Length: 346
Image 1: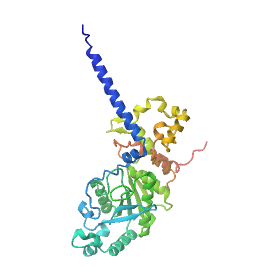
Image 2: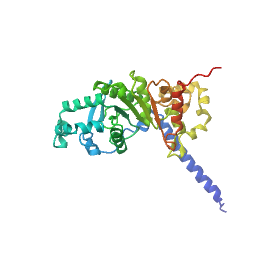
Image 3: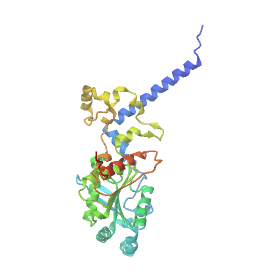
Image 4: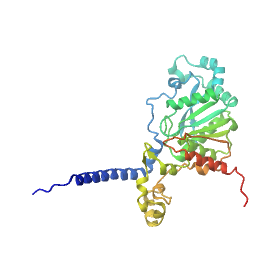
């Protein structure tokens, strides 16, 4: 006699099998994400060099006015070479447009043969006479991404400012591999390039977008000179806090499944010093009390940096941001203004 298995048990076993498979995939991805190589790829996404087949030395092909934007190369302290675009302010470009067009080659393909001395002289003049924005973009993509090009155009037109748009190491045509310290060196190199070419510190505004906000805060703390100001567009307080609250596609919490495992919580993991010692043999950067956060190579702790910021600060953040919650901006603002508030007497 053949036993009949109830339908609800069949559904239960199928659901359990599906949960085991999905759980296995999740654990595999978490373990993969614990490796430094994977973290670099996931955080910076610098190998997604969209759009493809870009000609960085021809900005005119990407909706920028003829010879208003120039491709420049910047050398870092650790011998990496960075690609960047320098865009003249609208007012400066309008005044010097005849000179730029007369000096330009008739064939765009021969742009590299343009008189560099004349171009450099104009860049020096523009930096001495007009404010300049050092723009630090976010993760993935390059300086050619259309939305970023529109930002340069808006800054040049509405603020009448020059714009230096930098591609960090490993991005676009820049050499090297990105890292938290590396991106800081890149920003310092861009700052030094502006200063060498005639820009005054109080005439340079540092603007960071998303990941670029973390870079801007680290670089501002590293540079002794005070910029005209620092602008943070959609900032996060620090990377580990962002990951704590990050939701995939705005729906699925990234680390919520790990938090239900007691031995992965910070207090529990701190109680297993031998386990931490063994893991540090394989992950030398494991120095955090929290098991999950301990594997993080990059921190981008803007909350710690903003307290010591000497320059004026502007924070811009959408309240309905699905990737970086608005309260990150509120945390940064509160930390920045706290030192300026009068102390209450007891």
